[in-house]
Image (tube, rainbow, N blue to C red; front, side, top):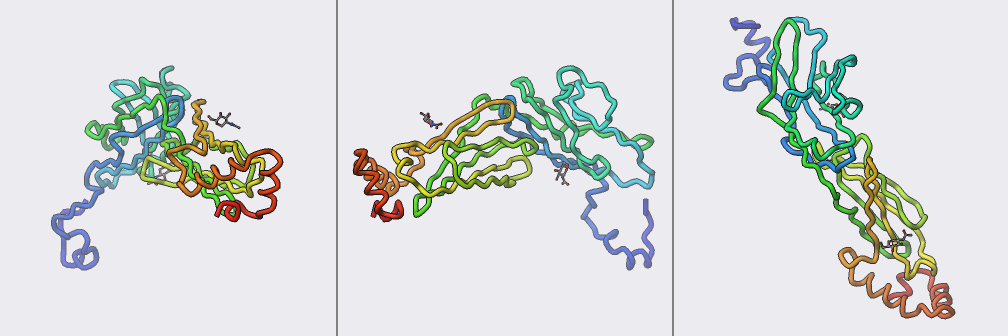
Length: 269
Ligand SMILES: *[C@@H]1O[C@H](CO)[C@@H](O)[C@H](O)[C@H]1NC(C)=O
Ligand SMILES: *[C@@H]1O[C@H](CO)[C@@H](O)[C@H](O)[C@H]1NC(C)=O
């Protein structure tokens, strides 16, 4: 630790004498969300980073623990025997040396609310428990269905998305109709992610009068379906288009009519 600043040091390391700005590494700090929603049965990733007061000591074998009450939930020590409650369900994902204490809990149970807190042991230096920065998991028994939107031009473009806190094994989105699909997962914030699937296809006569379904399957088995047409998602113009096409749906006529107009738009407007 440097306690005396000579003129030379001042010029060489001006950052050391900036008043009032305490470098983060002089304190014990942790960055964790205080609350994370998670779907029952699925996984949840608790993002976590920490810093500790600087030391010149060589720090080998850091021991990191996630705890709730007196129970150990997860650790970076590979050989540690976890209790049956958390064994094979928790995984320490972070690189402790790099200040990363991220952990994952799988097969989320209604009892997994926490509060969870992090403890770090730096042998021959210090041990610190971040007991003031706890994480609570809000366990959701019935997750919201995916949100579906459909745009009908020459092609049908349907998007179905769902937000979640299980980045490692995100929910799977599937469609009731074939077509070209692309799926992407985007970060919403440190702990929430949005997985979105986009389906495109050229509508056929056989598509009319059929709902288009998007199904989400969470890790752990929970499943939800959203379908189109659904009153909450459809735009008025699409609704009138579909109603119009349905009116034409007397077997012989409709197929002819739809074949004649090359796109759905030109059929409707
Ligand atoms: C911490 O580790 C996790 C898991 O490897 C990683 O996804 C995340 O990006 C890391 N966080 C930071 C701030 O580096
Ligand atoms: C689509 O969803 C509707 C309404 O839930 C259901 O009746 C129908 O069987 C589903 N179709 C397919 C192909 O999954």
